[in-house]
Length: 215
Image (tube, rainbow, N blue to C red; front, side, top):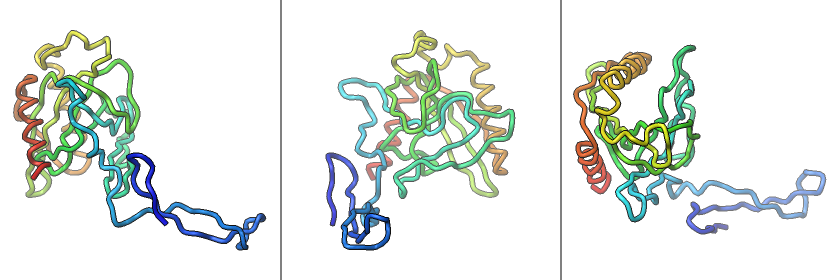
C-alpha cells in the first residue's frame, strides 16, 4: 500500500500481524518501506533562486567548525558522514550546494557561505553571491574543475557590507587555497586555485551549472 502527504516522497507500507506483547499475532501494524522505484529527496523541487529575488538558495552539508564532512546522498535521500578531518583541522566556513545544478565535477555546484553562526546539516539558506574561487583538482591522471561560489547569508550582520570577493582581501583566498590543498591531500589529490571573480562571474558559473542540470 502506497501514499503521499503533500510534497513528501511516496511511502509504501507492508502489513504485519503483531500481538500486544510484540510477537506475531492477529493485530495489524504498518511499517514504512522505501519505494525503490523513485529517487528520494534530491532537493530538485527547490528553485535555486529565492522567490521574487536574485538571491540563491543553498543547502548546507557541513557547518563551520565541524571536523565531520557530510555529503548528501540522493539515492538515500539523506546526508551521510563522508569523512572525518584530522585533529586540529575543521571547516572554516559553512559549505553546501545550490540545488538543481551540476558542476564540472558532476556534483551540485559548491557554495561557501559566510554568516554569523554555523548553520546545521540540511539547513536551507537564502544567500547573495559575492564571488567565486575557481580551481582544479587532480587525482592520479584525472583532472576536473572544482569551483566554489562565495555567498553571504542574507540575514547576517558580520558580513553585511561585503559585496565583492575583493572586499574580503587577498588573505581570504590564500587561506581558502591552503585549506583545500590540505583537504584534497587527505585523499591523495592536488588542488590549485586557478582564478577568482566577483558576483557577475559567480552568476555566470551558476547559470552554466543550471544549464548542465537541464540537459
